[in-house]
Length: 128
Image: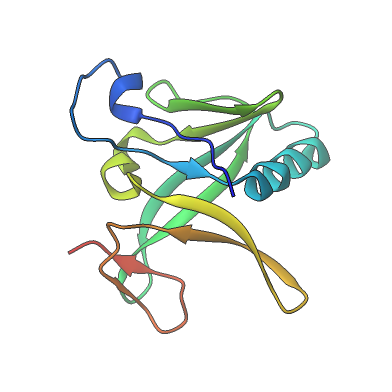
């Protein structure tokens, strides 16, 4: 399975020998595309994290009409763009976003190498 890669450090104009990436599988890109077209007003998907849950952080995926000034841009295909909130970048670096089927349900999966623990229900994680 192939993934699109994004180097937020390089995109921000900072050189680094370490590879910091957010990867998105084709299944997740297709899901984002469908959601953007279905929404009608959205032009991109924005990834951020917020403090929440019993463990610390949760992912926030929003359909947005435009980027915030400090968002990092990841073009994922002809008409799909992932925006990464700059203040969430340290937490999501290295994350792989996939769309997975569990029974009859489809859901986004975040495989984040920075996440050290997850809560029992899977809503939150921490990086300490």
